[in-house]
Amino acid sequence: MDAALADHVRAASAAARRHALAFRAPSGKDALPWSVIEAFDARIRGHVARDPRIEDERDRVLIAAVKLAETPVEEGEDSIAEARTHLVDAIAYLEQAVLRFGLVNRAGAKLGYGNYGQPVGSRD
Image (cartoon, rainbow, N blue to C red; front, top):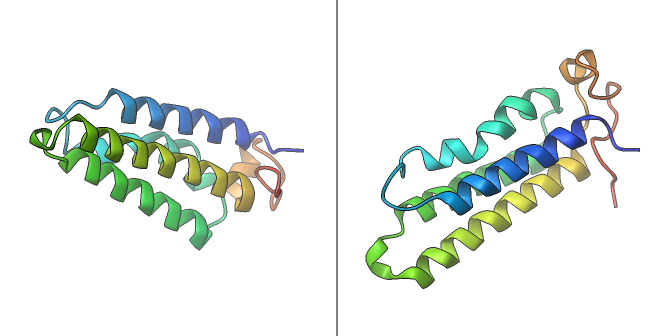
């Protein structure tokens, strides 16, 4: 059975995807990486035991967001669409990593997100 935190993971991923899909250069390009992971950091990161696989996927999201934000408009819609797809894929991988490898930490357990040490999601 998934921990209650799994619903927060899915909601944070959905918020990140909305930011990625709504981004239009050049407005907000400096804020894009942080806005994409804002919900993850606020709702998930402090409630899951640290795991390098999750942190690596979070870093991948940041890198993909920077690439999208820095893709010049002059390169055309195809380049921007490719960068956006890369970011959306990175967000999906982060969601999968948390659901697969994440364990509820003590802070998450205190908030009722699951039992301490409980897997966030299914391991398959």
